[in-house]
Image 1 (cartoon, one colour):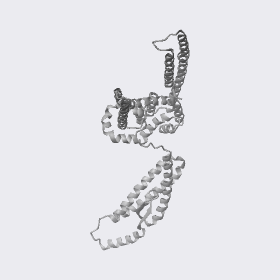
Image 2: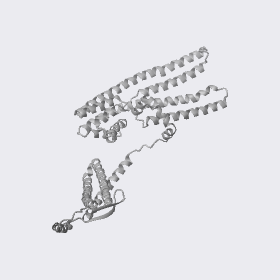
Image 3: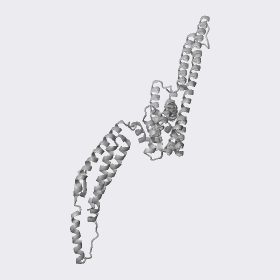
Image 4: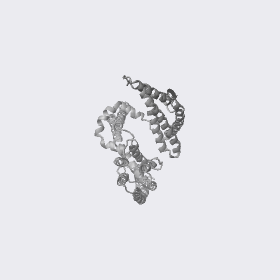
Length: 431
């Protein structure tokens, strides 16, 4: 009987787990609340029927025995009681069935008259769990899964022990990785850096060997392996900071419109966490959405309250304006302030900054246009005329012919144009 009791309790634990799953589904899919509720009740009825069988199983399993004989009168009364109680005493039966959710065979002990009701409730709850499974599968199909990097795995295999020793020395790099939303642990990133440095050094040695075979006197080329390794090291060290700066600019461009959207959502008196979920799911705010997902992860996965999650993410974000927004959001929630008014004021400030930035860029573009006309249109024309006069007069400059000077001038104009376009592109705000 002990095994029967154990199986009943195991099944009750499974039913409670299923009830919890249905509760989660009910919260996420409010439109089908009645469907989930009816099936939740079916599971609770199964629990009740199994609980009814436990007292009888405990009675039969109990090792307590009576040794004292009772007087005859007492025995007669007891027999009479047994006769009446035998009418209502439950008839316990063992039954097996296939679980709708796991498709495994289960064994339970239950009152015979409750068998039919139990099977009916089991069928009803099974339908609910199947429906819930379909919904979860649809959600999983829509979720993008980031596959692990093969290069990162190889790097960790060879250099993880060495990179873990270097982690304490690169605290600033760790902050840059977080701010740039680079999905690598610092130890893995350092492993990839070491792997890349080794590969670039080997490639440099091969290039050096080829050059020596072609020209045995070119020993200066032995610097190539060290140069490639140094450039790779510098690239890995500077890339997170550069990416963090790029993310910071993109967040600044999205922030005014995201704040307006948040203010509109807050006006409906929705739960604050839902505001971040709506913005995170929106495809219009890709970079701010990543920061919002960090908050949701800290609340839903790590179990932090919203105020703590906001403060944690505010300390990691690369954008100062977004940091202020999160910190103010946390303060408003903690003190019971009016969220809508706070976000509306912030949205107005961000929109004003956005307009000023656009006006500033328009003025800068006008200045650049004047400089471009002066240096790269007017100056080359004057230079050309000067070269024509010098050619007619038979003059040269620093021992160079007019043709050489003309060629160098054209190269100089091309280089200045490239520099000009690079600076203009760097100053241009994102669309």
